[in-house]
Length: 353
Image 1 (tube, rainbow, N blue to C red):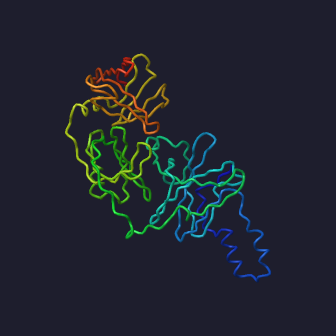
Image 2: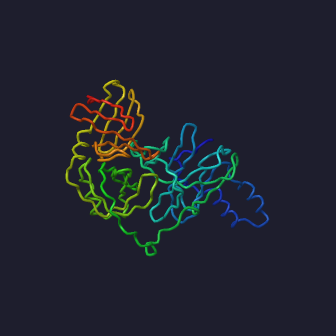
Image 3: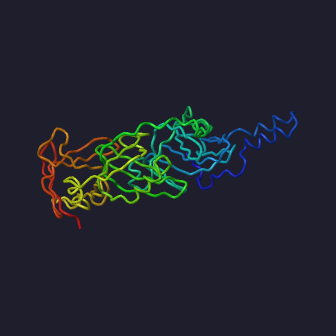
């Protein structure tokens, strides 16, 4: 498989199809067979912009090592670009299109993307790695080894604001820990993150959340609990696209103080290579310097079937959805003792300096 280079994919020249249309109009009928012969599409995966606006396109595919996203290609109206050259080694490819004024219909298949020219391997832990996670549409080319042309209008429709459906009723979503905001250069969308109990909320600066709320988020203290009210839109596993309508700071309680004590790096007393770091409500575990897991955490008064002997530390991830329960036996500035449940195994950690 040979991929064309996104930075050169501005398609400023007319495509072969566009030239064929012009020659069709200019030449006598008797010459049409001569014109059509060289008009055969180049083998590969070709994308054509059959809309009246310039469109920005990202390609997703299964690479040799992992799921991969690559972009951006900019396609002028009536222009085409071969994103994968030669015989197609796979049947399925994935696309995302981002253009103001157009709504993109995806298939809820997430990849990691970013601004500018990029190639990103792996489709998990996007925010942790400094990317944003967005949904792609799947394109079925029909068979491996052939060539295929996809038209962008299949997944696009113009946004008509006057026909937009009424906004869903806001819900009280309970409390969540504010993880911070990530600003993106235009035209890409900045977002803020809250981590609740088994839910992760992303609030985008895309006009759906009121400007006063968005500006308020920029000054919120990281690691504090807030009560959220809003509308949940796209939900992928345990991550929710949230249109936030109200946010209130919760008074400090025991869970806030414990979470504050847990911030920073820790290492196992029995094995200095076994470490983790807590930032806000996120725990990143490493062994010998290599990242092993990224989990979200919450301080709870009950965890699973355990209650009454807390507080408990609940750790969960957005990929598998699985969770782990620990009883917090002791915590200070320099030492942490957890009891892994339900086995009852004691784990002792000291502050990593």
